[in-house]
Length: 388
Length: 173
Image (cartoon, rainbow over the protein chains, first blue to last red):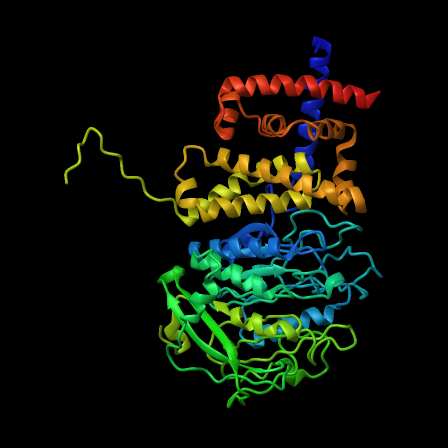
């Protein structure tokens, strides 16, 4: 190599590295500094909440195998749980079929149901970027109404554009109230509507709780999450779960008739750890059809979008214990999103858990999912009326 | 059993999850750059980084006690990126480029020729060049990251750059 060649190569290398860093080192995705303003951390801090840890986007797209997505969520969730902090998981994918009303309803319902955190999954919440081009795939007019003062609206880590109008937007921590010590954000559907429009959902109870959603690879998701949190990456998780004999009163569960080919029964729980490391594993198993004594049948859930049955939207969760529900949804039952080629039927409402979990996917696979279905974490079981 | 104070190993507090979070926040951008250099796709790069961090987390009790855990995760990142690109290459050979890559390519402009050239180097050469170009690592740091001798790094880098010069200039013609 001649000195001239060497010099040119040095220059090219420097330019290439600089250009690359400028492209991907910017806060466009998951890395890099955030602009000033109401970053999630700041917003959370302002709300007296545990700072949010942003571990990056969670995206499951045709080019991104769900397994990888699952690992992402698992690791993020694990970190959150063990660190006792909140977690921000973002997904820029959006659901092109949703409307602002959908989004508002999801938030309202979630709050009504006691969920402290919900995702923005694909819905055009009213604080979506006002410069979103009208008539875009979302198919709804922009509601540029600013959110209430003080709620923080500019959780933008990169400018939106015509090509990516929702870039970086998420919901301000205070959107869900000031009294939440922690939360999870899942901003965007876990899987794009191109794959059936599984929405993220989620959960939370008092901030130490996580819940999460699933989609067709729901079993894998929960499995992975459980492995990660439980520190057991082996495939023996199923066996481990088999040990989860019921401790404490079994909540009523739910029966079929709401989408599953067979009934499932809540099979117990096991709590381990203390404080922020507290974990509560819940297990479902097949069960004979039962009628839950104090919950209604769900034809829809708080996650339901597009349903015209507001009562059902409450998921049958009694108003006096709104936060205690577990819902398993399937994609091919009756229920949500009529006419969109995708329905989800909540099949289970358990009133004794301060977290809501949705598993979304074909009912045919729900048996497996239910095996892994609910994973919730809390530091204080007594608040739930349960004991380990 | 007593312990000889002269040979006693100082007690080291195990790394905590909080350490991991801080570590993640510190190194993440660099890792994405490393992976993107190989993959030329932001999304894939983020995936690779997430996997690498996941690997670090699951073994954080050990990784977290390394003098330079960042070097460990850099190595994992670059290797996983190379693996992924090879898999993608097989796919794209049939189905064309995956969505997204073009965006990064366009942003890189003429300099993309450098990364394309890097992609044609041997695996070891790619590791060395990518770690050097993206991480501004010294020869010693690269050697530590790759667990090879500094002299090997130098020799590898020299060979890589010689080949790169030909590849890049050949591509420019």
